[in-house]
Length: 325
View 1 (tube, rainbow, N blue to C red):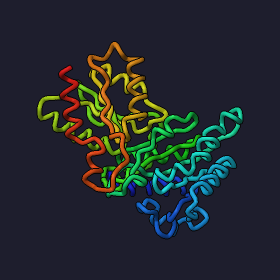
View 2 (cartoon, rainbow, N blue to C red):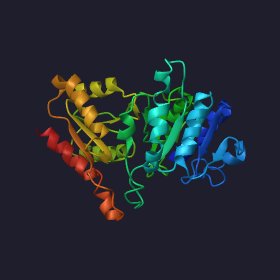
View 3 (cartoon, rainbow, N blue to C red):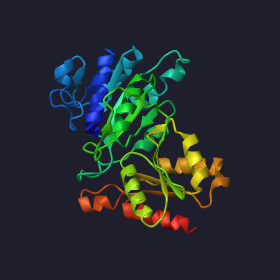
View 4 (cartoon, rainbow, N blue to C red):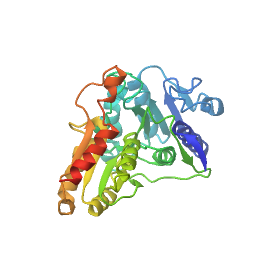
């Protein structure tokens, strides 16, 4: 295994899939000669040329619509939206067209489209470049959604997303791009819809995804010093949701805290909490708790930004509080 950065793992996945299938191509703003704002597509333009690594105008709605049409015709486009905030410009193409095409064609048509984008706070980019909008897409039938937390998961899940026949929203976190992790040299795939236990425990379950997994793991380390055994469950794929692993973990620990960076109101955590209460109420020894971002626009000031999302201290305190109930 080699230890590589998250963004390098994504680049490897794109390259391998472009070599594997000539129908895979990339579209987005500045992804060609510039290599993308986060350097995920660096050097791919030189290897595959302008017909497969396409620099687009600054017009998300138009090139996403092109991607939907190209996918319907049988190719496998990977469309990059520079910030998830800009995904608000493509809701018609994604929600009303890509997500519904298979259903409205009676299962005869498919849209094998991947939309890569990045969200979350970091670097003081303020309210219009720091949002966590996964709940918007989570709500839409017909879309799949992936939010990996490690280089290993990022590579295996992106390859599976590209090979999937349904539209996939693939959300990366801006603070993960330079994180490192071990990735096998040989090819591998991670199936969509399979969560992963990043740390086994018996006293309580911390359920999360994307960048918050790193904070949950650090919180679990602190709690272990006080004799508290914390299970950290990484969803990896929000849609399909691995209900089986969630419910099995809850059955084992009897306590669940859901952690996500997106604001609490209307967040993914509320839906998962309701599912657990409906299907595993008798396994719980305490209420399901959510630790989430504040219901506020993300400020430009970096210190204010940090207190708008869950901290390791808040997670540790939440665990101790729930164990006392």
